[in-house]
Length: 240
Ligand code: SF4
Ligand code: SF4
View 1 (cartoon, rainbow, N blue to C red):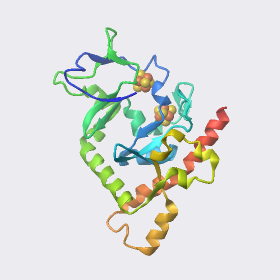
View 2 (view 1 turned 120 degrees about the vertical axis):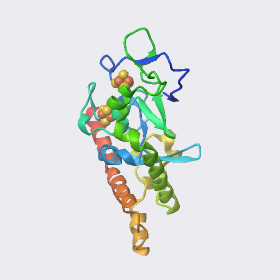
View 3 (view 1 turned 90 degrees about the vertical axis):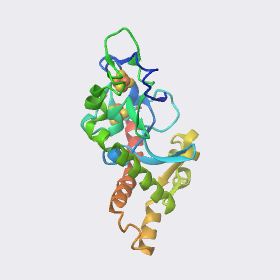
View 4 (view 1 turned 180 degrees about the vertical axis):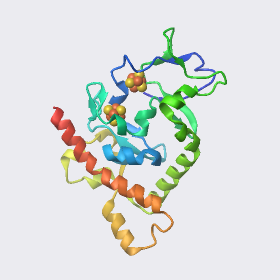
């Protein structure tokens, strides 16, 4: 699956046929890019980690551990999302997203294609993302605030890196072989917020979060989300 920038020429004949005949293919991904916009919902359901790729570090959440292709999200019940009302933003907006503020779609969605079947065109008459998808997927609120959301997310990540809050995931769980099984092929690229380190640094520097109350909140949400790694294991094992 790849995220493609929506292109007014290349994608002028693309349509979306709708989800009704799909068996929730999008719930079998494994790594989802997050922003501060959906940290609250996402951190209640999934472990939030940090992923380093192409010199860029991003907050992400994970659906599952291991390497099995086609493995489904543990919150999926048949083809229904069991946390639908509280599902994270990326789930709500999928197959649409933004990259540096520009609309994208995921070509892994089987219902987006050049097709003679009926569906909704990805582009409107002005060659922009069809407002239908803004109303039903992306959300007007997100669209209006997207510059601020991406900028603030970047500032938050920079703050974590600058203050040395992140440790390699494999080190954090080094004594637990089960956790090391969590997406081993990505182990070098995954980082985790280290709550104890932050607690010690806060004791040493009482002004660490001065003017950054929002960052402190995000860190608390992310730290709390780490227990969701255990929940994901439990959910998965209950289904085996
Ligand atoms: S968004 Fe795409 S992949 Fe997800 S359920 Fe709908 S059609 Fe299927
Ligand atoms: S939270 Fe729900 S919508 Fe999101 S991947 Fe899991 S089952 Fe699918």
